[in-house]
Length: 393
Ligand code: PLP
Image 1: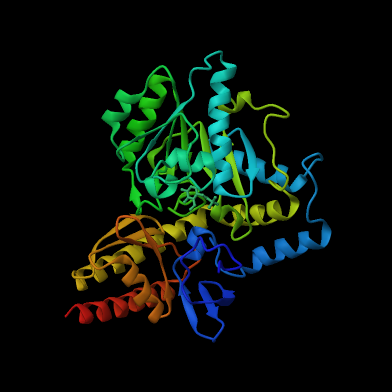
Image 2: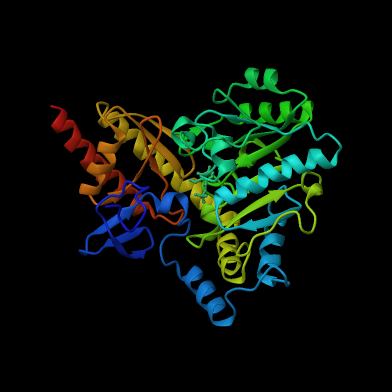
């Protein structure tokens, strides 16, 4: 008999009933160190007092009003994002995949309104993940995401990860945009080198196609800049954001330049919940904390510490781990053992991590993780690795 919850997830037999900072407390009382943060969502940890205050204060005033009306919290969050990024304008969604829907629509509408309606094709890269909506799976293109869900939304092309020669060759008269994650998350913490991202951005500019960055997982302070592409010194035309921006409240956004957004006018897009007062009150609190230079400096310092300790871990357990990948606090352990076994052994040591493609274990702690918690995390991962190494003999 089908379970009452549609069985689309492989769930661990763990049930967390409370969260405190970097910790999740299981129903049986065990305290797990959370190195997944809801897959890069709980950017400020669990039950952060700043976010609890923002949420509860807003909850006592007004939760939801329609986008038929002015929403000051939404205006404030849009202003903050514009002030702190390349963007001139912002649309709010509830998730990353909805941000993908709009990014695709915006790019196509741009060319439509420029009297070049033949430009509909969007070029992406293998290993990508842009969400589970019809545009999201078509944009990513992977067999695991798309099999059985055809006919897929047409107009997407996929190139080998980071292959800029292939990109230059693939851009043609029908190309509307290129979509890329600066660091692939689900794809296995595969970062595009800054120089490559710059070259990719130049190709887009020179060939007159829009650049859509998917910063749903790598954005909002995760790499030690507010947005990951800032390391490369580039500006996209359109950017998708979600996850960390709500700190656990379902919130996403599309940021765009005035030019790229020029086709979007009243009636061309909408969302019932997107940008409602409750979500934006939390989003404002998150961005208020994360955009502070001192906060980002701390993320960078802690990222350096964590990376150094993880390099030691890889050196100590070469039969289990191959290398450390990623940037900032978006890190991955490329494994020699099966990544699922590493995650499971971690549960035994009361540490939560997240598997990704390419046999990688993702480490995406709250950005507020302390030095002591980083030390504890690496110790627990070491204990898990020792156990796996012993089992391997
Ligand atoms: N884009 C990227 C890079 C992601 O990592 C994700 C989610 O993991 C998404 C899009 C989809 O976001 P959501 O699950 O909120 O729809």
